[in-house]
Image 1 (cartoon, protein in one colour):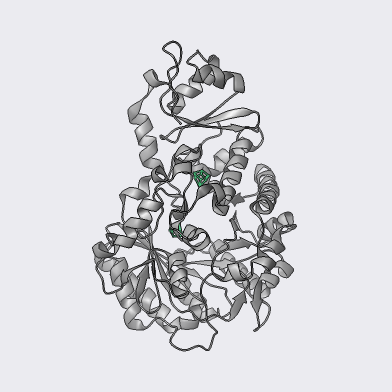
Image 2 (cartoon, helix red, strand yellow):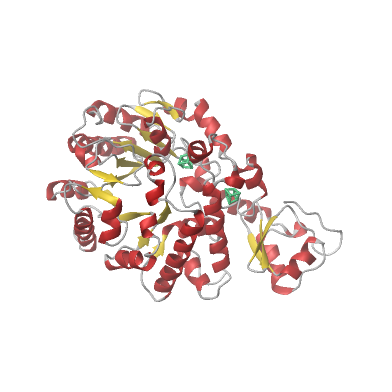
Length: 483
Ligand code: SF4
Ligand code: SF4
């Protein structure tokens, strides 16, 4: 919100503010932030001089009108929003809708393992690779998902080979990733994936009772299989010297359900025990399949925030004690807020990453703004479909749906976001808004996701004022110990 102080002392350019922990947090469109005490803030906004270190912090953050270093400030903004200037980087291939799990929160629109007409064909896989390589980016990621992608192994394997061939022909840098529940993993598949430098990600919700409670698997113990293959891939990563190919560290995703709420420390300990160096505390979204089971697995934003704070403080403590662990949600937000770097987190971009940051290629050749948009399509509403694999990339990214989703996720056009102190670091999700509030624009004052984001950002900016937490958070954000 712009404030125009008087002519003497500090003259302020446009800024936003939020009362926090008894003081005031100021932010601006350059991505700068500064904390002032209440009395300093009163002086600043009425144009009176602000003493000492706070004045220097105001200058450095771009809050003093006659001391704006435009080149530096614009450079920060550009770096924090770098991906907006490039083409689509993430290409999600839905290899099949089939899955042998029935997870309570699954939004992936799955069908049973034996269902027919639910697999990507070799022809669609090839066309999908061709379309993905039309991105103007010099580097791209293809992520194989499902359902459970290993159910459609032969096509996945051919898609990997074809994509690597295409990489050599085009000279673009290709990253391949697989998201699997590991239930169908075996030595032969693992070897192929390793030799083709496919990075591996799985789901791990915590200790066995929590994980298996969320992730129903009639074929056995989901947790045991997950842990076994995390250890397998971790061991390969840790002993890769002398190999001709690069082995990535395996990673895991956590979905926080009602079952997780009282077990923050146990969940973090499970990750630490397996040597995983990142934990991503992702809140559940009441959309798709999760909406149906919300009574069993859902929670109010305040419940998540309480869990998140306990887990985050615990992780910060472990990290401060030298354990190589960080929390991914916090890290990505802090990279932008402290490091002025684009973390690549598509849902926190402005505009969001729909089509221009990611595309989801359905098993049948339909292409959607993102995987969440594809899930809405599975429920019979193709609002987020932007084309098919037979289309040209230019047609997909200039499609009317792409433009509408970009417009509605631009925080400049969201009335509450435009005035919010967290605008430089936050993002809104048109798919989420459409599913929960009936419009891609949403209504932030009553928006569940907005309340979560505001709570998480309040917590992070609060922790930045804490002398013990700040060095850890700065390290996660990729900046030095002192600023
Ligand atoms: S979504 Fe909410 S927290 Fe984020 S910028 Fe908008 S109003 Fe602020
Ligand atoms: S629409 Fe939502 S899920 Fe899709 S890219 Fe945008 S923020 Fe992400």
